[in-house]
Length: 314
Image (tube, rainbow, N blue to C red):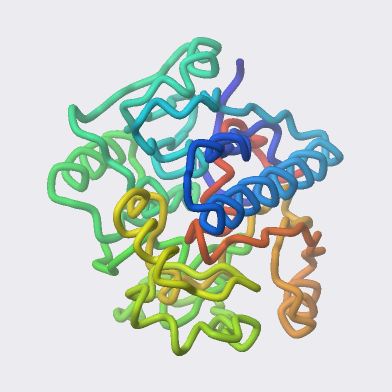
């Protein structure tokens, strides 16, 4: 399998799309209400992933999926939904920073797979490729030193930032010379001074009717649209699947788009202003459903990991 990437906007030829368990994974639960809600989350997430895969394929993008064991073995293993957390392609090398076998069948197709760390490292989205430069943002010292030395050896200029959380929830390039961002990308304005920044608004929480009252109980980690947030659900998440969720209140989901080509973006935002802004820069947004973003705490960019992009702009 060919792999290649030096930026996040050239024509995407192949990718990994994450997956979750089938709804029957929760058949063992005795609490009927919790079981029904969790099975609905899995079912609707599965449906949305199938829609996303179909859309990607309609743009001639080959889609690879991780393996999923739908049999509950007594432990709530995190589903392999966010492959970008642990996959990074630069040129013809794939860096794999996870420790699970869900992706083995994909890795076996690739000649150059490097596992740089003994421990799991889930911050690959905070490595932003910009062709002749790269941003390393908020990485731990071991990962930072490794990637800094690697990119310096490759004659790639390294920019260092210190944001918290994955950087693709803070800013993303729309293409060369253009950022979409929730705030200033750089405090030092001399960096990328000739790039234009498009401001992306915060999430609209009004669609989650009880979220404001609920978020303190759930520690701002997760929300399920249309679900009355009971103590039973909170206790189940906190006790058994806390590692499945993140901190949804701090994630700007509209930044989690994926460039399928320099002129086509896969998006979940339905904001007319957002779409008009993309179109003003020559990018057509293609909307797909992603209903449970606030449960999984991830956007499209998290669940799709680049494998091959064209070497030159299409």
